[in-house]
Image 1 (cartoon, rainbow, N blue to C red):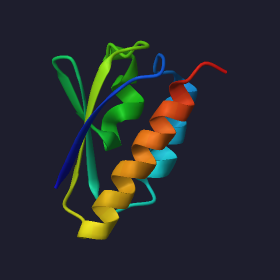
Image 2 (tube, rainbow, N blue to C red):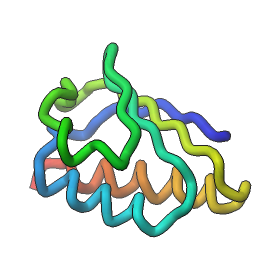
Image 3 (cartoon, one colour):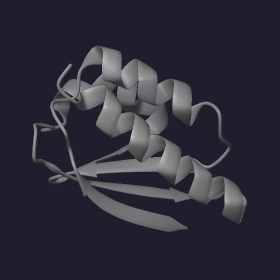
Amino acid sequence: MYIEEFTAAGPLTERAVEELMTVANKYTSAITLTVGERTVQLPVLPVCWDELPVRAGSSITVEVGRGADLENRTALTDFITTFQRATGTP
């Protein structure tokens, strides 16, 4: 299992969620996202993303597990990179 905390580049949007789900669907690893007091497993993100208080500077924790070690590490890096790009200012 791998856990990493980072700071959001900007707000979470519907477009960003679509990009994150594309990344998540490439892996068998389970990805969990925690923002403030709320924790969401990626399969349900499309129906509850607007409940997460993601803004520029928000602390985000991502946990990746239940896959092979290399896949977990790759999924974590890919997810965080995509999150930062998708929530960044255009």
